[in-house]
Length: 264
Image (tube, rainbow, N blue to C red):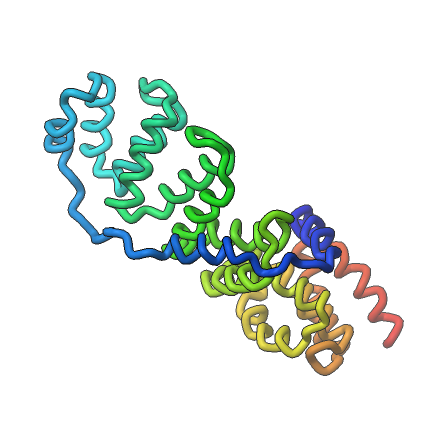
């Protein structure tokens, strides 16, 4: 976690953001188009095998029977994973993985299938490398509530030179915070500190105070009360939060506690 924060702080040293990219808005809008994603009953393995009998090998048929007999939540996604990794007697086959992931996205409304399609576009596996298309699938997953997708979009729009867009970054970071992401809240805090937007930061204080087992939250509260930025300066409260943070392993808190002693 500390390494992540270090990288975030480095990234925040860049001041320039790209201007709003109209093409990205188009991608975001397209990802929210009304697809026929109505919930359907899972196809029974006998029906699926019957419909695809001519195209299924004995190994594929055995895998389908096993998956449905185990009553897995997302059977089509599981088939995609097996083809993607080349497991359970199936040879690695990205084209077939894409087929099953696409079905899972549509029929099972599965955001993890969207994530797999996004990563395949992003890495050029089974598709020609296409980061714009990857973002469209990350966005679909994020709109379905997938926290990982929301964090990935936050990172791409904040730090990736090709896609930097502060408006979208702020949107997804707040979606991540609403989805109870501690990483997103900490990142937003660092950004607000850098921008010296303590009025907005003050509104986030109840979120920090709601989880005082978190090392970073205790450090943030201790820092704010130490500096008096966004809150009334209070060395007693600062000491309390920094001590908790230090006990949870934050070395910077130890240094700040030494500084507070100078004021006593």
